Length: 263
Image 1 (tube, one colour):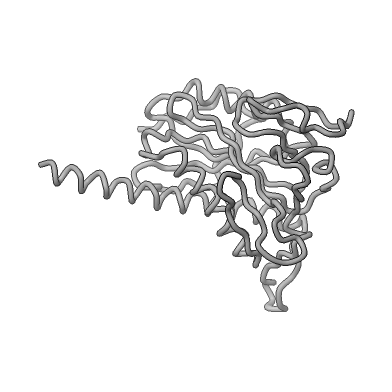
Image 2 (cartoon, rainbow, N blue to C red):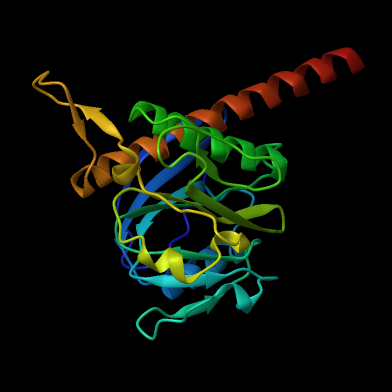
């Protein structure tokens, strides 16, 4: 039996978009819509604090109004040019400063890592792989970079630019925070910071990078715009569930083999 926590949420909790059977453990994917950052931050912490061993894992899809978030060990000096219209929120994830705003998909992963036999490094790899798979489905080539979590374009005029950022907090073996993917947004606020602490790092979105999708009438590829953001959010959530399911199935096989050898 699972325990689906309600708790204080970003807003009234919407029905799950879908539940995927990730091995033995399902994941609810919930679209929270556009929500202010701080209520979501508070809700993630409250959800995690109230979890039991039976609480169902969740992925929240959110879009935020403009906000800078500064990681637990973040250096405020990476905010180069403060903007009175964009608040700065000090939070408890890893990493430095980043920007969230309209036109960006944010996925928060509220997972019980111990139950999934999932190491933090593996979770980071799985999140990055899900973003890579999502971008590939919109005809963008990208890559990881060792020591710099996130996803970066590999070709074109914006080669090396960062298109997705991630940061996590692990508490009592459970994760919160997650990943942001830029779809079509005002990129100017990124010019006011050293994104993720890297001076001069270009930040780009899918529309600027030339992402395309197949038209329903076979008219040929069309450019990604903000209109595709809901579909991109669902594609990212599905990709996250797919990689987490594969990881859990692998861990279960390894656990079964080890048990058989010990018998």
